[in-house]
Every structure is written in C-alpha cells, then in structure tokens.
Image (tube, rainbow, N blue to C red; front, side, top):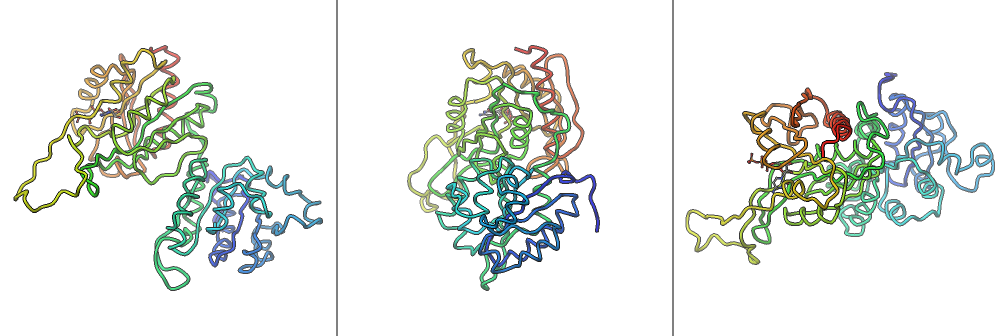
Length: 415
Ligand code: CTP
C-alpha cells in the first residue's frame, strides 16, 4: 500500500455515500485509494447500492461496518447517524445517480444517505454516474446547477462507453481522479491563513466573455477561468464574503462562494455593479475588448458577402477602470490582471497607473506549462512603490499568495 502521508487528505475523515448504480463497484476501489491517501473512510449505502455491492465488501476495505439504513438500532447505538454526519470532514457521493442528485438538490431526507447529506456541515462532493441521456436531461442539468450554486463540488462524469453498450458522458470518474479532485479542494491554504480577509466583501471576476455575432457565433478568448476561481476559493477560505462573477466556463463553484454567471462584457459589468459595494475588487476575467456593433438576429450567410467579411466592432466598457474610478463603491483595494507577452513590467505598470489600480498582477503568456488552460502559472504583482514575484506554482497556491498580498496592501491602507 502506498500511503501518501503528504496528501491533503491525510488524516481527513471522509464519509463515502454509495448510490445505486452499476458503477457502485468502483466505489470499492475508491475506498482503497482514499485510505492510501491517508484518509479515514466510513461508508453509507442506499438501498439501491446494496443491489450491486455488499456492505461486507465495504466493511472489509474501510475497517468500519458499512451503514445501510436509518432504522438499524445496533448501528445507531454505536454511532448515531447525526453523529456520523458530524464526524465527517468531507462527504463524497459516488456514484451519484440521477435520482440521488435530484433528491440532494431538493433537500430530501427520506433515507440514510440523503439524511446524512442534509445533516452534515462538511463540504459535499458528488461524482455522478448514469446513462448519458439522463445526464443531459434538463431536469438533471438543473439539479446539478442547483447543487453547484450551493458550493457542491461536482467531479466528472467522464465521457466514454457506458454499461448499456452506449457511449457518452455519464461514466463515473475514475477513483484516482476523484481522489485527486477531493485533494485539490482540500489542499490547505499556504499563505492565506484563515481569517485574513474576515469581515470583508470581495468581488472577483473570472473567465472569458463571449460577444455574440449572431445566434450561432460569438467572439471569445481562451481564458479558462481557473485563476479567477482559485482567487475566489482562496478569498473565501480567508474568511471573505465572496461574489464570483463568472464568464462561460465549466468549473465548479468554490465552496462558500456566491456565483453569478454571465456571458458578455455588458452582462459582466451589470453583475459587477449589482455586487458592489464591496471592500475589494479583483478583476481576473479576460473581458473582450471589442463587441459587435450590432447583433444579427439571423445567422450571417456567406452568400452575398463575397470572399472577405469585415466585422464592425466597438469597444466594450472597461469594467476595471470604471470600478476603480467609482467613489461610491466603498472599495479599499482594486486589483487588475494583465496578460502580456513582452515588456511585462512596463505594460503592467502603465495599466496600474492608467486604470488607477492599487495592485496589478501580470502574467507572461506563451510560457509553456503556464497560463490559459494550465493549472500552473507564474506571475508578478506590481503596486505603486513595490512588486512581488510569484514563481511557477499551481494556481491555487498563487491565489493564496495573492490573497496574502491583498491583506498586506489593505493593512498598508492603499485607498
Ligand atoms: N478589463 C475589464 N474590462 C474590459 C477589459 C479589461 O475589466 N473591457 C480588465 C480585466 O479584467 C483585467 C484588465 O482589465 O483585470 C486587463 O487589462 P487590459 O488593459 O484590458 O488588458 P489587455 O486586454 O491585455 O489590454 P491590451 O490589449 O491593451 O494589452
């Protein structure tokens, strides 16, 4: 057994809730991998799960009797279900069937698993597994969105062959990937200590914006939103009330963060204005600089346009500069981001001054292994009279460092 003593899951008490799907057999492997990562694992099963795997198998792997019902007086006497809900540092539902997701989304508590999920205060993660048509059904889509909006971490599903001989999104994420996702969300903040931003409201923007040309086309950019989501995660961990205004990205809402989804630069500006006043504004979104002058309600056709097509674009509002110049927003610190390919320091400092910012974070784009879709980044922060270099590291670590710097600059009374 390869015990990963330095895994963020080491010493964590994890309650694994197993739903009734064919993928329940993979939950056995998940128990083993969680224990390899150093976690203490207890298992609760739905009635459906017990049709696929036996409680005894989970008992053998976890070292605890698997819990199967609310109505087992012997088990309740050993550890009541509310006690079990309190025991857990993390709860993971795997596989989460469409039915289980629906019941969790709507707060039902009609069996052991849903009762535990409702009674616990621990962060909840779900790893869905179902037929691809069920996964894509608007009811499931809405249920998953509802869970995400409450900060539930959604892991997977994977795309590929399904049990019924069909193929599509619906396969349970591999146990190894589930453990990695849980570890990522559990990783302790390196620099951003708890309480560093306690009592403060922070508005963060993240991701790209899409500027629609016609009903089927848009202008967009390659921002993944990962950096902004990492900053929101870090700020929430540091005790801030966080509003995350997110462009179109497929990322889970960080725990404890209020997320507002937008599409265009104009919508992002409205959502930011609605979220203000705040103490800190962090503009990590890659807002489109230009948008089509007019949206074509009909699809633009090739016929009649000839060999070339000129798009008539107009500047979008500079949300960051607008926010920074507002006197009525209560802001103590305004932070911008700059993606530069060359003359990084010069361009970043010019933006710091031109947009009247307190802090700007510049990253050099085009460096292999960093930027855009990557999980790693390298950046330098500039403020009037100072700068700090953040060497290449996972975005969550960099975000912790940035939150620490934000707290420092706030103490220095930047505004
Ligand atoms: N920004 C914004 N609204 C815009 C454009 C950018 O709020 N319409 C913000 C971004 O969130 C980011 C910073 O401004 O914090 C980026 O500055 P910007 O000067 O737009 O950078 P680039 O687009 O890279 O500018 P340039 O093309 O001039 O380098």
